[in-house]
Length: 124
Image (cartoon, rainbow, N blue to C red; front, side, top):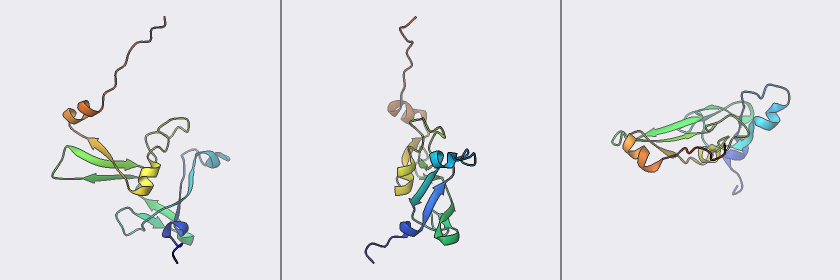
């Protein structure tokens, strides 16, 4: 019994929007991931036939109402559906483990922590 785990039985496949085109599902889908939860818990992953996970929230958010300036979020499909992007499924491991990312909502918090500078290329 020590080797048994709900995630061995309760598996999830996230279908990419292009997965219905020929064999692209083999390239684009996130398949066979063991997940926690069921349809009646906060991190729900509802079950279908053979206990496979078929439903649930891909985007999860925690809002602390005593600190309206920050949210905690995680997005299983991540920021990009493009397989070549560095942001393709870059939040998936966090979503599976229940980890979240801080999403500051006030400008003061975002400019201190997140800044990007665009500079022109020296090539003519």
